[in-house]
Length: 635
Image 1 (cartoon, helix red, strand yellow):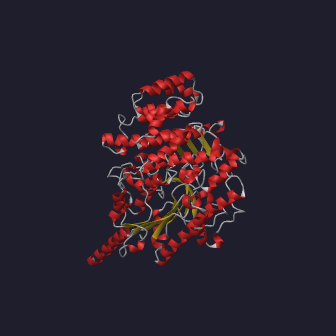
Image 2 (cartoon, rainbow, N blue to C red):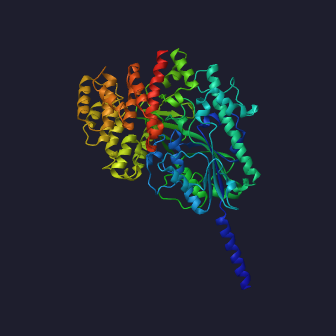
Image 3 (cartoon, helix red, strand yellow):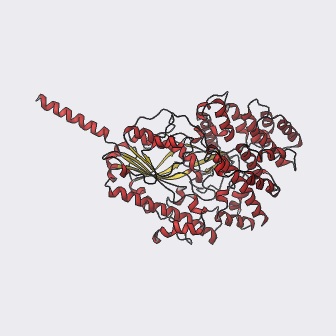
């Protein structure tokens, strides 16, 4: 009897150990540049595989990318931290992060998982090779769960690029047809005549053709998803694998990707948890959920599913928790290729709040990579020939409001700003407060100009993440006074002028940045700004002050300051000055000589140091943008 009891206890213990060590396989299929607007309940797209997961898994209706463009978005995914928390918010920057911050697959790998990544990384982190090596058992275009050891659990990622901006509208039409359209089965192609066209595009045959191309890229992405799922079925792993399918940020079309609104941030996401592991999920299968999630939550979610200890620095929560309490997301828009901008977003799923810090610019800011595409040619031609209605014209021409609030239920395409509507004052105040709190809580680093962040890191021998909490280095609380004044209008002018006298360069920068959007500066104000420029030592503040003077006073002598930096040897100052000339100064044809001279003087890409290649690219593309748009204006 004693032996029988011992055997029973042993069997129960062994069963418990077996359950604890029975780790789920996890499959991630990520795809590029897609908003749920073009998939969820949209008959224009043909996505049978995602539709199947909507019925059998969970459809997330309020999932957000923390950033609106690829590399900062992927920084958040892989680290479990907002890119703005570690300083990687500018697209393709070169910011160092502490060695203690690992990509979360590192912890799965330590747990015994086979971690495979096929194939994209683009984590926007310095020393990316070492970072990748620590994360992945294998990372290549051949990486696959099939390469694991026998019975080894896997975390397997497949990154599909068929819906990337290059495919949706940048590539020449011939290449798109060869690589996407002709490979897509005919029954999955979108009909140009009946497709749903966003109302901020003019309804014309040309725009319908452009839009069909975007839909077809999504359709082909779904087709590729099906091929991967077929492999899982072939290997009889469907009942052993938790599946995530999601996009990396908003839609690759004008006004989507790279824009600080819902269309830039919200993503489609499906999660399927097989019956064997449904005890791990606080959500039943076959439902839609309005839980608000964002990309810093993914690392926490996966490590929880794998029963793996989580590092304390993670900012996210478990998306599948039975006790889910998160009610809003916080996101950011910062530098994107050669364009410079800064907005902050908060959403509870129903409303989208956006704080715009640079109200002098419209929504659509020219970037050379996408701006030369045919879809933009069509839109610019319609603008020039007065074929657009007010909503369609405004995205090109209207200066943005300081705050935007959209009711996504009644205005999914975000055309009616409710921020000035007294009926929505309560919502506006709530989201404004959340945004302010998140900036300070996360010590949002992106209020530091990119070049200055690099200089501060070098000066203090600390990564931005390490120095961000030190007010003597990063005086964010004092900066917030000026940051909050940006876009305020005439009532803020005196306070902004006072800010130009601060002992901190970053405070002076934000005072100048805010003054740049003022439309009612007077001669006495220009005199004070001119005096501030004469006494200013920091190049990034000088550039802002000179820009204000040149925007408002014809042929002001301070243009020599902008020209000196635009033709100088420091790529950060060069980009800053060039982009300000391009974005803010009137009479653009006067600057063709500078744009051409920059291109002629730049060294070849091969001669540029690795750590400077991205900022070099921004300089080159800005100069090319100036020449391109001036040619268009001259037509």
